[in-house]
Image (tube, rainbow, N blue to C red; front, side, top):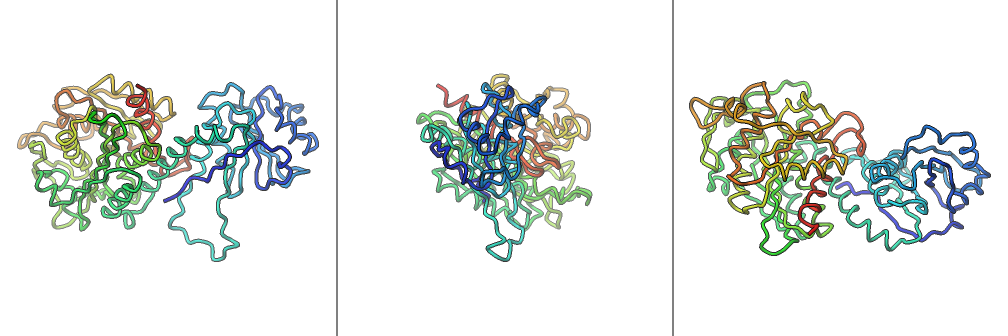
Length: 495
């Protein structure tokens, strides 16, 4: 998998700055006051920082902006990056500073002078997240000389051991986000259903308990909904379960459930050819769940969480489920399949019911790239949030806001549920275009047991995007890993 940049925590040594290669970042507040490190850089560069301040170059700059001095005189470094950041910077401003550095870092080593930083951990996280690049399938350079390994990110601070300890959860979080982004970025001929399950199974080395249910296991459990989605594919459908039990023994876990359609042609209800190549990201919900579980294991979270993902491929063939077919879910409800491209809710229905029957969770959150209607409603700025429980929903919304991940609540209601009534079965899997995101959630609502707090996250617009976001280059974003990790910390670990 793609690994975050190596991070080094070093004792402050201003005498070494003259010979440091690569890039050096120095923090200056908007008012222009220089700390000891900045004063040393200013002397070595013959007053370059002072001239920036005198020229009012810092004016009208936002917190987190960077001004670069290329090939500074008197230094071995190729660039000095002047980071504009108030001493009382917020976490978001500190992350933005890191993002700015991660965006321009390239392959060169980066040394951050942390003397004036109050939130070095947030700067590190921003830099790590923004430095992501998925190049697994690009041909590597032919010679070692041409192959540039990413240089380390070094934080020079007066308390390296203390900051190293504070940064451990952040490094785990970055790895979880990268894991999700890699999964979402992989083409379907590489991330098959079997390969996806294998990557999850490998996480048992981190302390997760992994269980993989095969088709024969799901058949015994009566999971006709999820199995119907994969009928048309030669790749076997699977249900992968990840358990992290770091909290009090016997305490009910929080269940995270993800849709893992490794490729979605739409099935017999075939999608248009234009843009179909993007449907490699239709396992985005499962990718987020896997990334969160990786993060929790790496940082040894003091919480009980179980992640369950239904892994399938939706293909047209002589065995594929047809529009008009009726399938039976694990719950026992019969489902009229109106549109085979409304397949994700069939996957989630059985996985959600299995999670409740097996683990009796304290709450349940599902994630899925579920509806194009979500993109029409909210674009690529926010995921849709729908819930039967204000407490759990508001806790998630707070976590998402804290982490800067856009989320917006939409309503549920009987009027929407009535749209998916079927004449020949208990429910139909599509109610057409009106309120498509909400009727999809109401379909899932049928598979939430009485008294079970539940949140549905439709991440169709935020899982993979065509322009840079705050924390990621265009492509897979890893949206949701930060927010769900925060939710676990706030809800389960702060006792």
